[in-house]
Image (cartoon, rainbow, N blue to C red; front, top):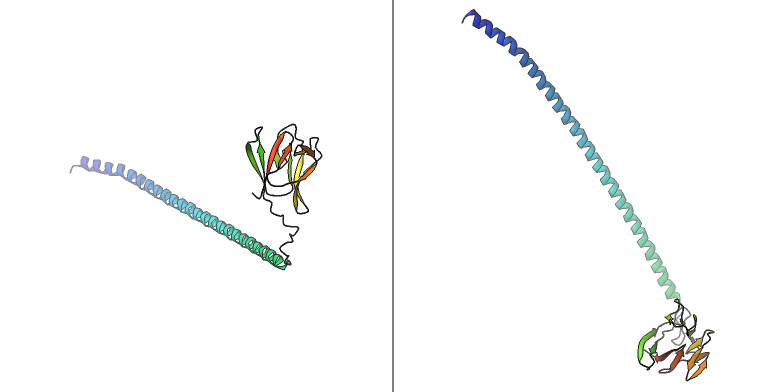
Length: 204
């Protein structure tokens, strides 16, 4: 090998060495950055797992609290139920012909509205007393007619009888062609309220 070739080889080696050193440095920096990235990702993952565990712990705590509240409500309801049962058991037994004041007697009555040809238009069931009738919307039976007063009449019980009584209206009640302020109701009787006619049905 000539001296010129040897000099060229030495020069080439001298040029390659810095490149190798620089490449080695870049590889080291890349490896360091990779390790830093891995460490940062691991920290974020650990933090995420911690947050998930904290959320799971809070959820479990809420569930336990709701369960405890539900059990308390159930115990309170059970206590009230047992107290009510004891109170009912402590009530004295009454004869069959005596109705206690806290019980409403059962009513089986209907008013059948008739048209001008006395054909039935509708049937109104009466299941509790007193039963109010009038033009106002808060009545049990509302009759939208100017011949009917706002509080025209009501059905009530008196002396073991069911009575319809006028509430101070101008037109009162029409029974058998005569005006009256009250009448004892009986099956199949006809009553005029304003210009409306109703047929009484008992026991329905």
